[in-house]
Length: 91
Image (cartoon, rainbow, N blue to C red; front, side, top):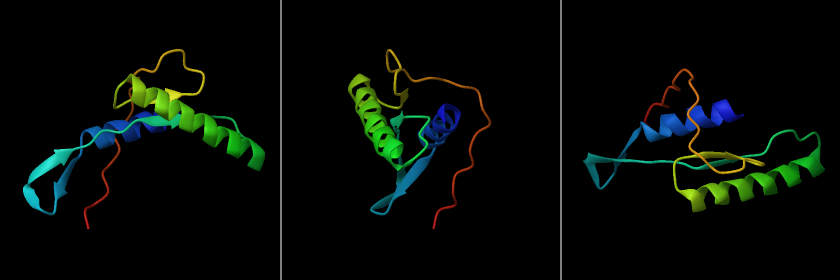
């Protein structure tokens, strides 16, 4: 989950989004992602969702453009080497 989240974060960070009002001036976006791992049933899924949400907000309070796992001591923008994701084609 951590590697996939970091690949998604990196792909979003390196993408440019054309705004309908001014397509000639694309903007860049970043994302903060909270991760909770290891759920086995619906009750665990509810708990995992709450934990991931808490991790997300810990990451947002620490800055931007990062992936935070439940249980991480300090949120950080973890850089993990991986193949880049391909951006979805624009509609």
